[in-house]
Amino acid sequence: MAIRKGILGAAAFAIIGGVLIAQFSQGQQRGASSRGAHLGVAQYDDQGRLLFPEGTDRWITLGAGLGGEYNDVPFDAEHPGNLSHAQIEPSAYDYFLQTGQYADSTLLLLSFYETLEKPEPALQGFVQGALATREIHVLDSQRFPEERRAFFVYPGGTLEPAAALPVGSACFECHIEHGDLDGTFLQFYPTIRD
Image 1: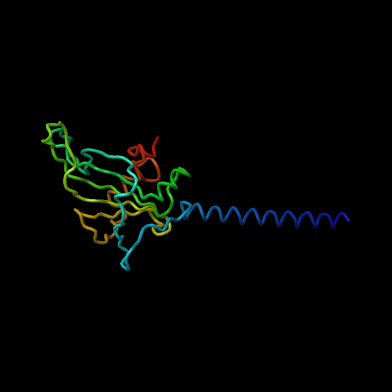
Image 2: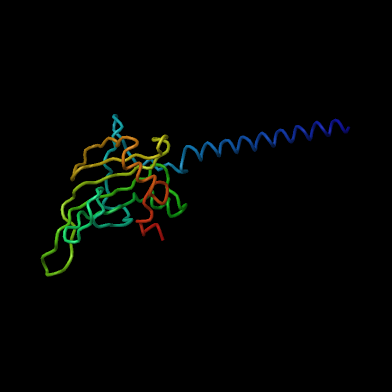
């Protein structure tokens, strides 16, 4: 009888242990390969180039900046450089509000506009001029397993599909080193930062 109880106890322990190991293993795989939900928002052509998304005028504003170009030229208040406008795709925004994290296939759009000094009606300051360039930061550990992200640049007002910037470019290095959350500049996005 004691032997039978010992065998049953060992079998139960082995089954429970096996289930726990399997669950842990699945959890580890999910965490390593994905941010959780995959939104499936980003669309690519047959060459892997990102199609410029439709409806970006309805995306959520994250923040804006003045003179934040990617160069070493000191800021000059008389010629401040471009105005930048950061946005997030609406379903990615909703996911972020629910979880505090980015889902796979999150799209962040950064648009740069020339600055114009506003002459009329006699107001001080600058206004948004012509569109200079747009950049899309795609967060997707499934499509980009090595870096978990990719960057795509759309010069001027072009809507042509864009190829990803090379891995290891300045965009990758800067975002990983200086971004507050998952390689993004959350510190500059008051809409979701606070």
